[in-house]
Image (cartoon, rainbow, N blue to C red):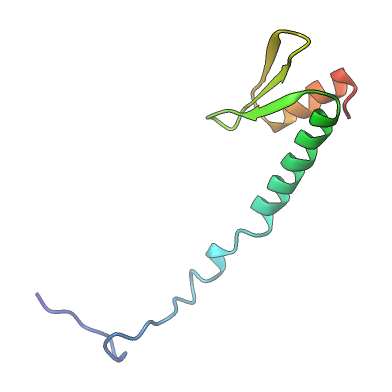
Length: 87
């Protein structure tokens, strides 16, 4: 088996210009993470604990209730927050 460097010097790292932009996840992911943290903090200020589920879902817990509420996605969490008066 032979390896070729396609004109590059052996051992040199050549940037892949096509995939350089695909590693930039700072826009959508960080915006969603910031939104999620802000939403969880609003729940926490009202005494509710929001836990992340395994399937991008959420579980809202309040010790006074002795119950929990499952929210299937971010939109359901926002809707439940409006019902509780958190938002």
